[in-house]
Length: 238
Ligand code: UDP
Image 1 (cartoon, helix red, strand yellow):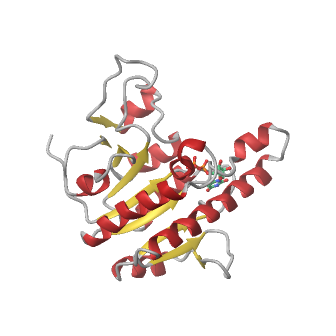
Image 2 (tube, protein in one colour):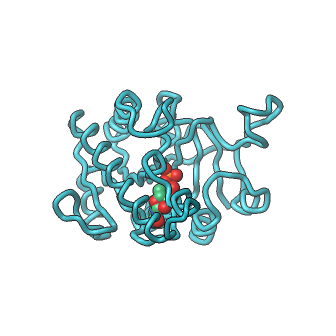
């Protein structure tokens, strides 16, 4: 199937993506690699907004299962995404990529508050907008945030970087016979229970026809190939 080219893109980076081999914290080398890929996208004229996760620092549900109040744990998770957003901003600005961090939880000393129209203006001016603190409410995830902001920013596609090059019939790291899907419908993902993004995020994309492409973040140049219409990763659409 022939893929489309995309001009305005929402990139979802999970916390784990920034952690590298250690599985936690921020790995500077990985951050550098990701920043280079993002710079290539900007140089190609792509309007880019990014939603960062926080799982490498704190995951609310895990905190909650250890006896913490779920909402308190989730607020900690949201604050963790702010740390990642600032690290990513710093890495990008060292490469002269202009960025703005907008946080859904106000903290004016470190980030702009989330204002949709202002974020749109930044994109038009060629700045990369990094959305921090999720949607600002507990019981949500940064995947859902990515779907929501993707729609609010009128993005043409949501691309999600992972450690495998798409969606497989089974976990390719555990099952050698697993095969990659080139494309899937939103319904397939929901019905097969494929672990792409949480169901709230998938449903939101489905209801508003925002295509999702899952790709391998470690494969150099993948992001750019996707937006240029190459057949990379797995496309989830109608
Ligand atoms: N979180 C939240 N509301 C949001 C976004 C995130 O409460 O709108 C919390 C939630 O506890 C989550 C944590 O922040 O576990 C980190 O986000 P997420 O798990 O989505 O990060 P990722 O898996 O992408 O690293």
